[in-house]
Amino acid sequence: MPTEENIDRICQDLRNQLYESYYLNFISAISRSKLEDVASAALAANAVSQVTKVFDQYLNFITLEDDMFILCHQNKELISYHAINKADIQDTDMEAIMDTIVDSLFCFFVTLGAVPIIRCPRGNAAEMVAVKLDKKLRENLRDARNSLFTGDSMTAGQFSFQRPLFVLVDRNVDMATPLHHTWTYQALIHDVLDFHLNRVVMEEGVGAEPSPAGARPKKKSRKTYDLTAADKFWQKHKGSPFPEVAESVQEELDTYRAQEDEVKRLKSIMGLEGEDEGAISMLSDNTAKLTSAVSSLPELLEKKRLIDLHTNVATAVLDHIKSRKLDVYFEYEEKLMSKSTLDKSLLDIISDPDAGTPEDKMRLFLIYYITAQQAPSESDLEQYKKALLDAGCDLSPLNYIKQWKAFTKMAATPANYGNSGVKPMGLFSRVMNTGSQFVMEGVKNLVLKQHNLPVTRILDNLMEMKSHPETDDYRYFDPKMLRGSESLTFYLLLFQAIVFIVGGGNYIEYQNLVDYAKSKQAKKVVYGCSELFNAAQFIKQLSQLGQK
Image 1 (tube, rainbow, N blue to C red):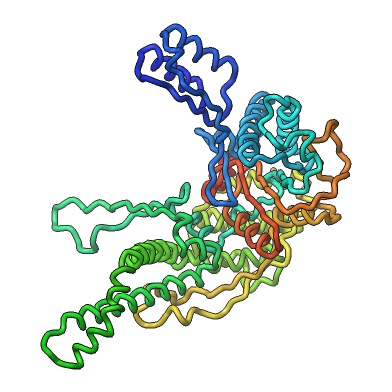
Image 2: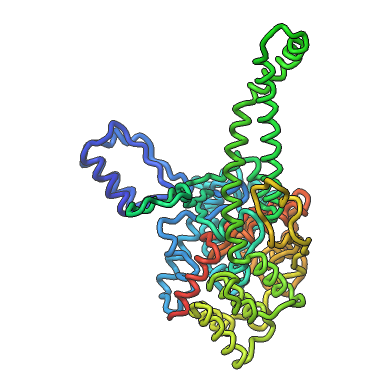
């Protein structure tokens, strides 16, 4: 990054004649003034000829999946939901936050090599980003000699039919989803484990035996697992409901054991002694099989590594589900969000000492408060607050959500979460067989019903050009048009869309968009966000806002 600190370091290295040659690659574009600082240092050190190349790489973002990216920022607190929404924010600070987000998004589109059609709501941070991004793209396109969108200039492809739709959405459009207890594998890992940049970090006890008297207790070892695109099991099941994942891990383990037993059997046959005719004929029949088995050994070992990885990760997730009754929370929240009939009272769950952590209870209550058509009466609210305090909850997040609901348009029209809900399939059966790695007893086998979350529904309205009160007043920007136009005069075939959440996103929304794209033929959707947080991190930000 071309920060003051990094530029000073480069200048110092030039003065010290540290390297024979210099290839300077900046993640985002270096400013003219900073480039002049580097040039002055090179000139003073008589090292101009050693500076071989200077590149602006436009890579100021992180790609977590083929269809997901987040902004790359050294201090993500500077562009967090808390930073954007704090009450005492200065205009200059807000401008700096928006510029940081726009610079990263500009890098993304330069790398993509496409000029988007931009849509955004009015009157929030998403609109500020859209206006600035449109201006930045427009200025770059106007400079024909230095345009970064070569081959995609004003003249060539002005009416291209393959341009992406870029939908900017403010986090305040849907505050319930980031707090929601989830049921899919990837989102669950992010919710309950330490999962950052596709790496899971877990603590494991070193042996179960007690330490000798007087000895120091053994330290827990930390294990890291990388969940990558090369992991076929992960690619296939990261969006699956957890019960399916547990069954699939067990099936993979059974298949591996069968293959391992076959190799052992063949080895045993090959080691038979004597001139027994039966043994000799078996040897000749099985030589080819053993050769095949030995050649597939590296593949078998890699399969074993992945099975062990997912067994450990899924077991850790299952421990959280069982100890915190996360299946109960997930099912209840789905009913709240879809306005379904509730089978037990909210107070019962909040008051149950065995049901979840104080944070789980606060998440549940906030979802109830956000999605309620009418806010609870003062007497009811006091009753809930007392139960939450008795359960050990911090009420700061509720203070902020009350302010948010009072000041946002959402108060009049709460987000519609569609026909969501879950279908209980009874308790687990197949994975409860003897010898299973996963003791799922008592956990509900819930199957997800396909439904569109608010962000997905907004995208669907815009991509399919549906008329809907939710999106009818969305602004329209086309950086390729010579003059800014608010009229919807385009009839492009929209096959590609990028959804970006200003204020932070989550794996629940990402998975919902992936499922939506699968249901639409030939449509590709990419999900991006200014930061990726789980519910605990989001609650912490709400708490900071509620304390002011």
